Length: 133
Image (cartoon, rainbow, N blue to C red; front, side):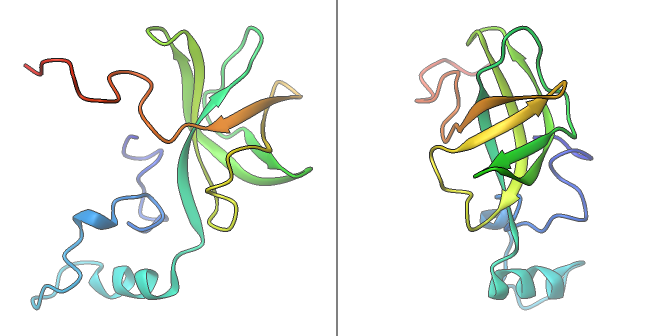
């Protein structure tokens, strides 16, 4: 994800999947602590998810609707073609109630809906086997 697309002030750390980096128990105050604690207690509304999209010859770029069970339930924040994996990918927010569903998603692109599935692990080097420099 990137700042201003997936990570923005309108999304809380729990919704963006960054809550493991927040020191909720820290005694000292920090900017946004009250909101972060409230979001954690209430569970947030959305979840950021990565998708693999079965497209024909075009790729998402952002702001496309994410459909689930015949209704628009979320939106794409960014996406494109993953050349190494040779597949179309997207990131977007969906309601937490459906965020862990494996199937049933579609992403609308150029007026047509394409099947999409949640991609829970990285497409490239998911086991962290490549040397880092």
